[in-house]
Length: 208
Image 1 (cartoon, rainbow, N blue to C red):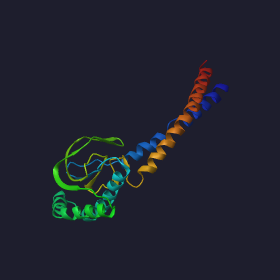
Image 2: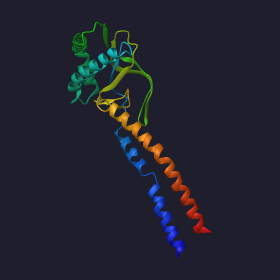
Image 3: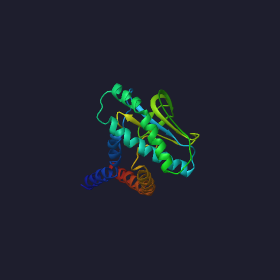
Image 4: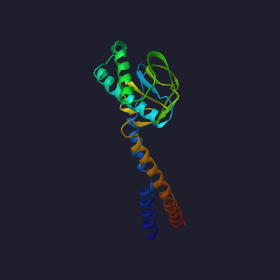
């Protein structure tokens, strides 16, 4: 009878320390998006990594992205999206120009559209987006030597920030949550090891 009670206790304790929490992270991976072969991207290169240059990049990002998203949100054809964006490229140029003027910065820029825009390799969640040449709008601010930002205009995936591996709106919040989660895991690990050691001793008693 004593061995039966000990066995039941061991089973219950084992269930309590299994990594069920990892299941939630696995299910959340479904939020990651695979970029289709036929897609149109937007890439913005900042002048440098100085704070003002990066802030201007973000301002241009917000202004351009907000406008183009309304253009393509109801489109279902890559050809239609391509034709629309090419026909309104001058409007994008104007948006960039006005955004720079509003920032009261003096900076040259260039707006291009093509099928051979270079992109770096990026890990986003469980997916790797390989480096290569892709169809995109390329906005270069100043020397274009600062950190870049990019997203997918069509199909509309610009609510995701592929440059940071997080949504644009919650990139900083997610980074803070990850740091907190790492700290919690480091704290919990010794306790888990102690429980596992206890279970081993308990099991030895049962089978002995």
